[in-house]
Length: 347
Image (cartoon, one colour):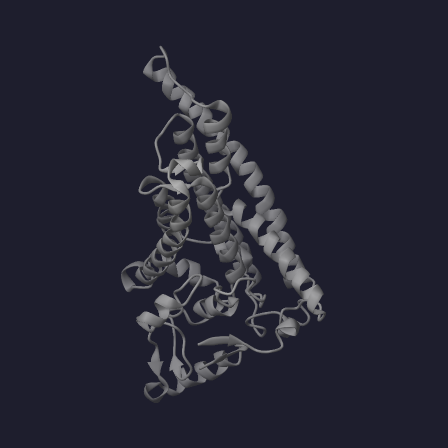
């Protein structure tokens, strides 16, 4: 069981006044939401969907030959993609830069008051690496969402809907926990799969280059892994009815929370079900443990959450760790050193 220390207001790096702490947390949350929308260009999907279904209504081909139709489709796709990339990169570097400056520059001299791993920082070369890789991920994500948006704009069928009356209020509210469970289970099990030898070394290990993650680490994935993650997030719109508001809200939330837990900053979670940022920071610190995203339910079920007295390392697969009694002298030394990085209590 994970719980934060009682001095949360000091550890967050924010003002000690409770009111100021809450205001700063809300500000960072809003910033992360905006940053999250820019991460993979998902913001373009509801814009195009609403434009097509509310204002434009339909886009139909009439007597144009097939090559002309292809030209029209590609023209619209690249127009959508161009707008998507300009807006996304503006927010990506603008908002991401704000988070980096607010903590990693402005408060660098006292990391013990806000940082999950206060004694270690990501080396400058890896900071540049994650931004370059994250930018590539943004381009790939924007291409995928622009493609789906173009598909929708030409009348492509999905299970997204705009009017609640289409499926009723009962399904509207029922679809919220269903979608949450789908996203959480999908995130957990695909994450566990990525931590098997088969997928970890060629794909996911690249993301774990960042042992002390920052906000930009949230997008720094191997392209193949990114496509896998994006596909899981997109899949619902093709398989079961989901309101455009619910779907987009989940996207914003998922990307925002992804940034929060990768930021390396001890910000008090605003919602009761959210895991402390240290939970995922420990995942980067110890590698094969703490696979959950929003909640630790699946980690508790499968016993893959980090517990005291266990050794975790990049070479120890399975999420269960290794007993201290079976550890070598070097492993025990590593355990003691890494344990000093953590500002949480484990039971």
